[in-house]
Length: 124
Image (cartoon, rainbow, N blue to C red):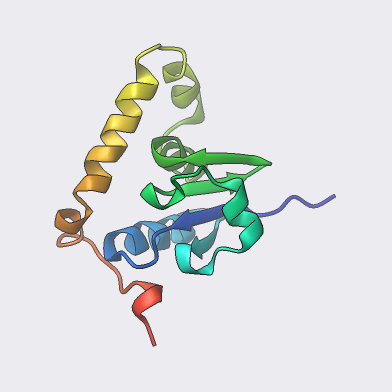
C-alpha cells in the first residue's frame, strides 16, 4: 500500500509563508496546500484555530505550528531526527519550540522583507 506524500498546509496569502513552503518543496518531499485550496476533509483534520499557523499532514498525523516546522526541517535533513527526539525528552522544549515559532509567525511581515515569494492566492 503506497503512503501519501506529506501535505504542507500554509497561508498562501502570505509572501513569507509562500517562500517557506516553496523552500520545503524544493528541499523535501511535500505537496504544498494553501489555505485557499484546502479540501473540507483536510480542514476537518486541522485544529480549530488552523489559520494561525502552518500544518503538516503526514503518516496519519497532524503536526501544527512549531512541531510542523520542526518536522519539515527534520524531513529535509536540516535538523537531525535524533536531535529532535532527544529534545522532545525535555519538559520545557515544547514550550520553547512553540514560542520560537510564534515569534517568527508574529513577525512574518518583517521577515517577508528579507525573503518572500509571490503568494499563490494573489497570482492570476
